[in-house]
Length: 419
Ligand SMILES: [Zn+2]
Image (cartoon, rainbow, N blue to C red; front, side):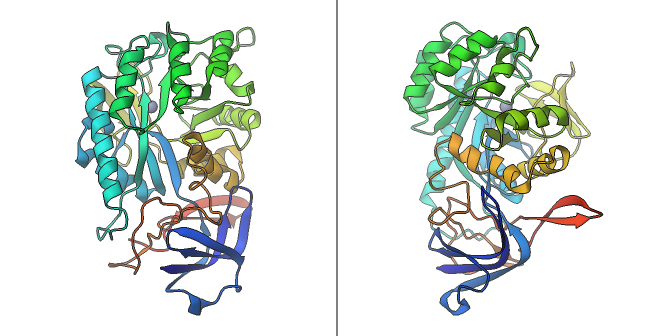
């Protein structure tokens, strides 16, 4: 199948290519050219992007739940509902994220995600005729249970424990090679050994829910931690006499910072500080979404704890933030609107940077020749001809557009191919 997308502004990790066209052959990007170079007659299908922006699909590596379902539900229905919600918000791939729970619950959740992934793999190449094809589950992110009680946030204190390498290796065995990120507090007894172990297994280690001081954090980074979990949230804060893990994460060039850019977890000033310190390469936008994402305000649960969502803020009864109701398209919007980050940089933080964090940057995360492409455009009432292929890259549901409005940039999401 040969597809031509015409009259698009193509967002690459480096710039925006205005008035360009893009050709897909099979499931790969074949050509990226200025408008008018390629001939319509050479293609089976043509989509006119009508001067809209073409973005790579977003990759959310830290998302627990949405639309009333949670990874910890450990059911096919839950993961499938989450995947179908993600795609509506431009997320084409995500890591199903666990939270601190009992060993048995964690195992069930891991096994369920692995089963879902293998079912998705079996369906590669089959046409999805439903109203919205699901996003691809790219693996698992284990958030917990080896965390600091002092920085537990909404993680269940009942199950927080010191690192247990035997238990962890059982989780990894159960997952096949599907665990991509493990979050751990590096100051705990035995943590450095676990960090080295994970690092040698090729698994990304993220320091999270941690009270680590500056020196311990530095040591952890030397042992193979390459990322911090939702920077500033659930970690020792910055002070000028003891900069803590937040401080060293900002200044160590090896470290990527996950950010929850909902304007609630981080003040826009703090978001700007992270951008100044880390640049466009070392920031990963995440949703850290809980089950109320996509639903209205109200009462929800999180690991048996009651959560109240009011004005999109999810909090435990003591006021602790309990995940977010954010989606990555909104996170990109916020980075542009609240921080003034160029659109292509904000998109990179939700595409190429997360792809790199989980070792998929060679095939995903940017619109570049040779990378994976997925043809998933749908016209009202029918699927366009062509085979639906997983390994999504080109995002056709939501095209990011921005217009100048009284010299203020307004970024909005627009469906050029409504479903
Ligand atoms: Zn989380």
